[in-house]
Length: 232
Image 1 (tube, rainbow, N blue to C red):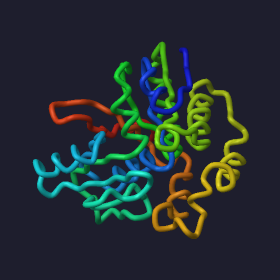
Image 2: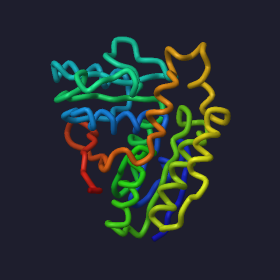
Image 3: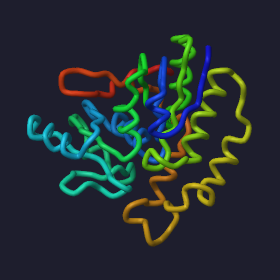
């Protein structure tokens, strides 16, 4: 098995084989929480305009997403795990668009199969990869806005790779503890708590909380994330 770690939008465009699009803070951590809270279906979309058009076709659906971290105007919720509860999304169809994570899904046209990934379901992603035994694996770290490296995404990719290869990553928790000072400072800035609440950071660092993966598939309406339980 050949495992490559790629980064940012260009990394998504270069991805081949079984591809994991990683966005820890916050897109694909949030999608795990949405399914954990009972969402019926989450559909990643590329643009705000597309999200509005899809809601018109599906009354009662929800729009969740951000641009530059801030909730898109006219949306129901921002891209924030701490701002959403089970009662908000249980049984709902959700259209989700972000600056980095969902853009990676759209751009990974060369992938044979796409999963999303984050620290909250890293072990499940690794278990799925071990089960499927693909020849080629691309772990794509989407970074900040798809254009700047994000240490948490690189850490997640390295952790998933270590689990697949059964080579422990002994400094995982130490590296998580360093993130508030090296890469995730905006979640601890009192002036940006309305956009980047500290609670989001800690929710996204709950390593291996969810036992499922999210497959990304495409149909006549676009992309959809499908939950598959992998671990007991």
